[in-house]
Image 1 (spheres, rainbow, N blue to C red):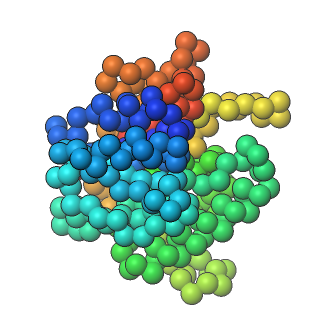
Image 2 (cartoon, rainbow, N blue to C red):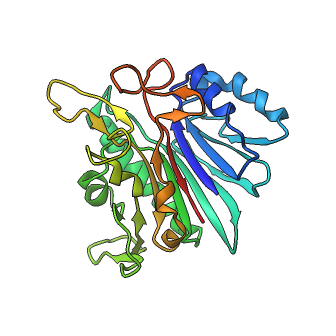
Length: 266
């Protein structure tokens, strides 16, 4: 089963790209973010025989387009993330789609807000008593110490069956002491050794020497990371006949300023 995510930046072209995909050749779930100006275009999919559609109609930041052959149901909708249940082989998978606040307009405000969102999201997920989780989305921040330490997101950019699936936090005053660990395969594509563009977003300022960033990520819980097909993890720069990069090999902003990501589970 393929899982894709893309911040479509409210662009008609990006939505056209997504809708051009064949959802019948194999099971696909295409999660999208930032589409509140494209609601009427999205609603056209409601009559599709091959594609299903769910999104938060109160605050349309996150949603999914999926093969109708997949047993997927919406479970929880929040302002900055949505939770879906998927019947996957021998277990039930929780799919979480995230779109956090951007630092473009207020870095201090976004950091504080995103901290609260992530902590709240993780606490809500733990209440569900299901440790088989896939989180995909636009985190709008670089995925290093900010997330691992400051946000208490226990993630790694590698996976080993010898790693513990949980991290003990003796200094954590919250009720839940054992925090689930996540594997983030997309982080492996940061830098020149990547066969793909070295990030999902190209952003530079006078105070920032690193222009390429991986803002869009897929985090799979260690409890099911063995089902991940690492050879099928990608940052997409072309979908079908659509080129997603401009002449400078940066994301074509007429389509979207983000590049989509893809992972696949066995």
